[in-house]
Length: 217
Image (cartoon, rainbow, N blue to C red; front, side, top):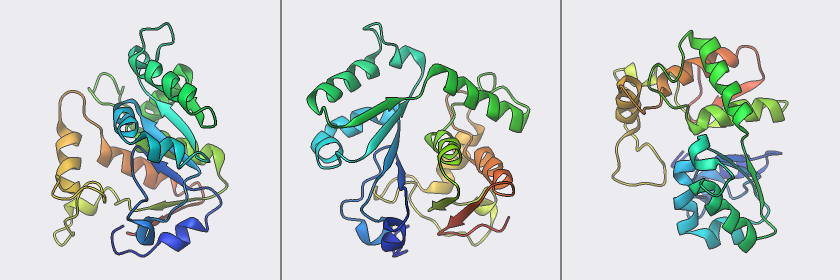
């Protein structure tokens, strides 16, 4: 996304969905300024809390959708992330905060299994925030435009460019290396490359377009 200059185009979109703690501040020219919905993993909640004024006061018009395992999101006083979100909701009463239900998380697991023939838990994988976001966007939107996502073949091409995993983090692990490590790790990894192959399949059935880089489906 860096130097793509897609900010104005993104801001003209009816609904702008961002993931986790991806900021716009300082990157407006390339990624835009508006955030309609932000889908956030339980692991990224501390990163938002660390800069809570930016995420919850300055972005009060954003709707937040949080997802995570039951142990972190349980509502009996023992859910660590749920308790944190409850405090945020009390401190910033105008912010719209939602949680993905246990049933919807199970639904996403079933989608993964239907697409791959593999049980997510038995393969030692976690679904990525991107997977939840893609399903949510297809539920919400007539058409979906995805920015800054490479396809599942990109990293195997000899002449692919090397970019950081996140546009807002300098000198961090590069994107393709991150994907390869996660794809083959035994426990606790995301199946990023597999997920992208699933998105390519969905794009043949839904109004879905990939930009910066564009995909040949």
